[in-house]
Length: 245
Image (cartoon, rainbow, N blue to C red):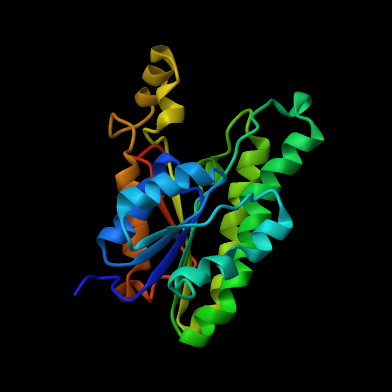
């Protein structure tokens, strides 16, 4: 029997490197998976490639009405998700003195408020089922900070505090809430960085390399298992030793 057989997962930001790896890993572990993102055509193509146990459901996380209906729409495919992976996020990097209000607000809207709204939407069904796994994808900068990312760091730090609070509210109902905090991961975005930037980054990582999306997916899959039911309110840092927290 597969570890996640009988479970349904909803993964946001599934067309990105980390989100795609998470969706594939949960599928491999036996879950049915609803993938979400902003590009319906890309989602449909990905769903077709992965097979009948995967469904696509687009959502604009900056649109509150769209977010409010996502869990219900996702439930129409395989039933209510018992695993929610809040992976989607955006950046609007700028030094604080130059950062516009809209850049700050947009990042918190997508990276923090939508996570609150979607987590809240999932609670009734998870608590009724006496089983649920809410897994937030944070970032090492939510703990360490990073110049030029005051908005992003604030959202990711908020994610940790929000998840700890929610974990305490729902633990008695068999629902866990945890954060996976990646360091520098090899994705399309990091591949666009110049070789000099890569060298500077690697010099600060004891493992001597960037992480792979599949390594983040493995951490998510671990927390999604029924056997991980006594782990809640935690932040699992996956960063190659960049920050030993």
